[in-house]
Length: 440
Image (tube, rainbow, N blue to C red; front, side):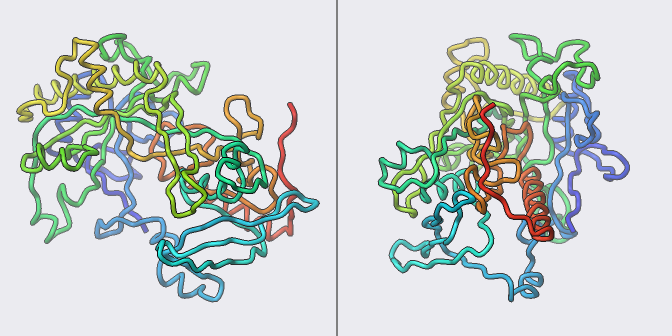
């Protein structure tokens, strides 16, 4: 059983009530001083888009992290079902072999090796019912392409026999971050009582904002901006574009840089996030060797609209930093900020240097019609790969478009739905012909 562990904002009575503390309290007060309000329950359909929100965590009663494996397949469950369950750890999938039948392409065999390159022994498993690929937004398209499912020209370049011709693009969310200084030590409180700052996840609070709610050029919340209007014409106008995450870390990708500049001081960062970027990257094969990682091109900020939004997000974070200092928190100096927030050249230089990913990849095997005009789909509404009868994909790669939120809970939702559909098919004895979309 997972319990909530967010001591940041007051939530609805059925979620529990917590009091903010330390830098998070200063961040909350700074955001409120800038006109942002608290969102009591982000799961509510009537929740406003602009405002502060606490984040759920999957932890046990001792505030220890609980992964989806621990929650859904604990040791006692695995042992109880060992007659129907085989786990192969330290393995690398080579490909899924299949053939064409009257119902379309059918997966017949799964081929895999040990993850250690030094061992050439090959194993295989016969497919009796179906295969569910769940290797993440980078791993799942990698396995499909190794299996001869993907862009024809690309697979032919690597000498892979074609079974199905599919084309796809993919999405990523990009980030940049200005920062300041601060810190706290509650080691003994955590060791002896499992309480305090160290019992919390690295992120427990976020500010969500729509670009349309900010004054152009100033990143100031427009007076009278509302995010709960019922008569707005499009759902897209009710989705946030920017997330600002307060983090008690440097949030640097470069570990050596962190060691040189930040390892011996307290650091507080604001990680600014583009929630719905327009830029698109690609994931392709590096070679036909399954041990070679896929070739990933993030193509961050390649769309000019994303760059403009990144400027707005950084301006907003800088204003929040100033507001936190006005609340009395001792931010001594900026450690990773633009040389000048008034200079477009300095701002753009900072964004290019600090843009990064936090690995929320999605939509590489997106659910959509096979010949969708925006981007070709890979799976249908039952998560089956187009043109196949017994091959599904189940992970964040199937999202039709990038979600304006963190992806852990939506990924679990997809898995729950997939399990439900599989059980429903088994109960009704349903067999599927190869999926295909209409010409419309």
